[in-house]
Amino acid sequence: MDRPHLAPVVRPQPAPEVRRAVRTATPLALLTGLVLALAACETVPPPPASPPPAAGLPDGPAKPFSSGKGWTVTIHSPPGGKVFCLAERGIPVGQNAAPRLSFRTAAAESGFILSGFTPSDSGAAVKPGERYDLTVTPDLGPRLSLSARGLPNGSLYVAVPTKSYLEEMEPLARAHRVGFRSTGLGDIGTMLLSGSSWAINASDECRILHAES
Image (cartoon, rainbow, N blue to C red; front, side, top):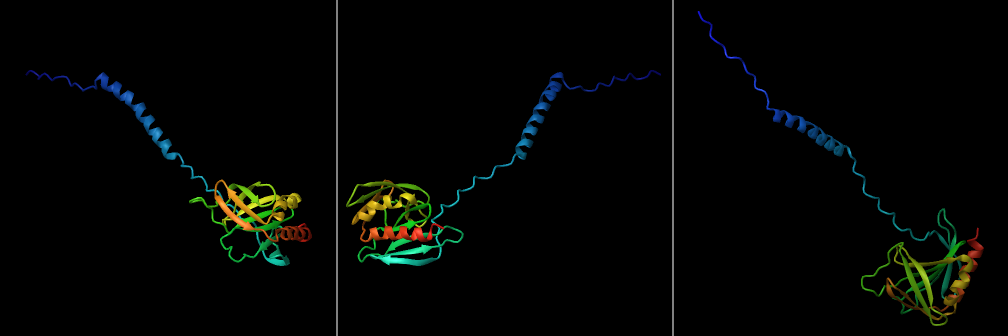
């Protein structure tokens, strides 16, 4: 009896082009996965910290030193800070909207604070910590060009070395009327300066007696 002839078993083989495609695609897939893994491991840097708020001038409990010519000089002792003296004037009748000057003296740095004003430029406001040019025009003596720092309460602070305080404040001591202007703020206003000579000298005397220690 004749045996049936069996056809040889032929196993399908991938075409050479397919094998090459598989070999080519495999490294690309690995590279893509590696890039994605590295991207997932990257940490997002935190946003930059906002700058600390601008500090105002130190202050503390006050006690009287002297008064005269409508001015009052007080001694201030900030907690953990340096003692300083402050000469302030009461608001004259009818001048509630006018700027006010306070003379501040301490061991190393002295000067004056300009407050109680409304800038004339539309939308202008004092920014804490920012520097402003300040033009001071007294009725007696030359015009002064000073630099002021904005305080958190909207005031301007002009600082000078204490050793030249009396010399720097001399135009304000002699003047009867003074005007203020700043490029960034516009016209700040005009004020009367009666008794300013007494206030400047009294604040310096207070500094010598109490703020040098």
